[in-house]
Image (cartoon, rainbow, N blue to C red; front, top):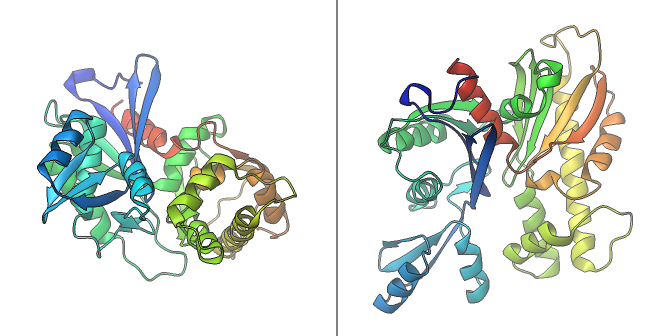
Length: 336
């Protein structure tokens, strides 16, 4: 493949997720990935606070008499102030209730990339698949991100999130299989055949659903639940403590809902290519990270009586960066 700077054109993969934004770019013979949480918190404005934040290189902007701290630093401020962070996106798309949403996403992307204007880089950015049962349109979300990236000086191209997982993880099967991105707002599913998306849909239960449910029954902030989930939760057959028990209950709900959606999405089979052999399933995203998740998901999948045979279920080698890496691979392939 060509270098990501060949002919003066930088190539970038960008995963714009509900819970985090991840950038992937080629560096030598490898891929460099960096990320920021896709969230923010507003704090009262004062000149002293603004000066202190600048000195500490805290990413922020001024808006309506407040200082809006965004990215990973927002989590630290929220913990100190004992408040919830706010999200520019909800369930995989821009949150219309947050007026600062697009400006926050722009600030986070700029913090990750730096100056877009140099060389007009080609950016492949992730978008979710439509809901399995229809309803919400994704046109505004995709158009808003495309316009934002173009205004920043990039040449944007969208890519389905689940398909990007396939590109990142299934080269050995010639990009045939099922890629699943279990993120914060959505679980995205894509059945790909020879790199072509055959069936793609999203399920509106994922990490945020787990956090909100566990927070409601334990009385904790959802932000703290998420931190505990990411630091210590795992499936081991025994759950000590109320929070761990609540997380297990809501995780199982997500798994069962996702498996049922896959069964329903593949039902009928009229669009499924005739395969001579079983195909793999690759899981990615932060919600798929706890130890034992893949085994629990595989067990549920085996009970679903799918119209296709599955060869294996595994978690991506780097589940938090798989979508961004797949987007970069797509950009590099198009540049050949």
